[in-house]
Image 1 (cartoon, rainbow, N blue to C red):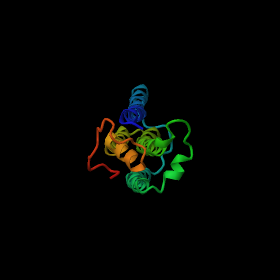
Image 2: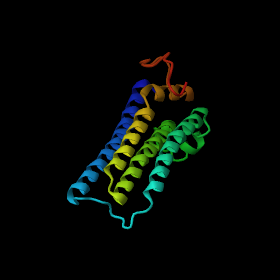
Image 3: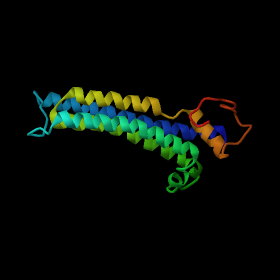
Image 4: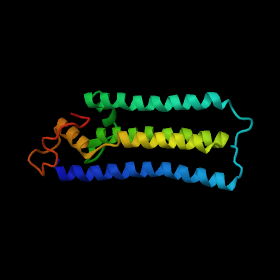
Length: 178
């Protein structure tokens, strides 16, 4: 595969990631719409579950997701997840399937953090809860969004990148996959 082809695949991945990031902004819009149309909004669940327990549990789960993403990244780098991630690969881009799948799984985990906040908002009506989880989700996306250099390093490590192409990242260091 040439560097140009790899760039095309990366653009596809960026589009998918961008759409998933945009979805958490949709949750924010829905949150504000519900709040504006139901003044004062105190949640849809009555009686309220014990929020002093539920909120910290979901914050802890969100922090566990950050750790889980790092554990999965280490497993991915070591090649332990390749067989699992290749299982659904078909077509001409099957060689990139593990990297693409890993990235999309990471996006989904980051989005799940925002969903926790949205659920808390729907239960108790607290915008603060939603926006705390919204911010954590944005941080998860920002910290874990794959860079082209990551994809290129993975392709090089996998032996699927032709040497001597455009050489956009030849000799780069410091990616999460080197």
